[in-house]
Image 1 (cartoon, rainbow, N blue to C red):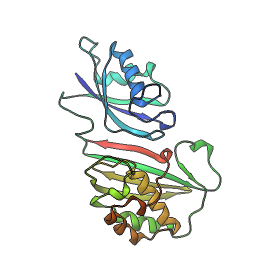
Image 2 (image 1 turned 30 degrees about the vertical axis):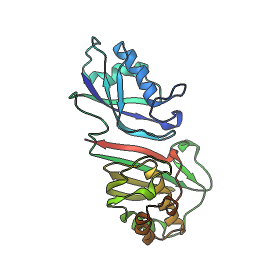
Image 3 (image 1 turned 60 degrees about the vertical axis):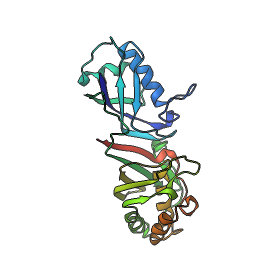
Length: 249
């Protein structure tokens, strides 16, 4: 039996998703919780590998209990797991999927959201959830960022927006939708694509902020993409502003 479980977690307290000996990770916590629920070691596989400090409002994992474990109905699994879960990690829902299903390779789209708070004085209630950018952006920043965002749409080689040192060979990805929204002091960049390179969304967010602040022009984006050179793009935004928002299959 294989469960597809949708989870949510705050990234501040984790060293990323992937299990690391001696460090608190999402996968490590899931291994512990699932072993408590099913009475044996389970195989837990994630849809992605979020970095340290990155949160998720809709992250998907498969859970494969050992032979002979209790057959818990999928709809009851979130409540069955609740007593064993920490405060910063929850099971949202669960369903049974075929044995051949893979939570990473069967993904159709992922949506990430990156949130920036532009203000000299930080908000302690948003600690670990936004990039506290201590500068007020100039007038006209939002339309400039929206104009720049439109250039990312479509299928491109995004090598310029991948962290240096990554060993990924195929750097072509498709971005289906992209929005930049401002609400008060908060700027949110939403990106939906068929997959993302290491630090890709964080580099896009940093590049868009450079456009908004006037360091780059909206029309510079096609040239940066075409260059395939990481140094041409903007800074890598810090992890705390990033959330995996939605996964579709």
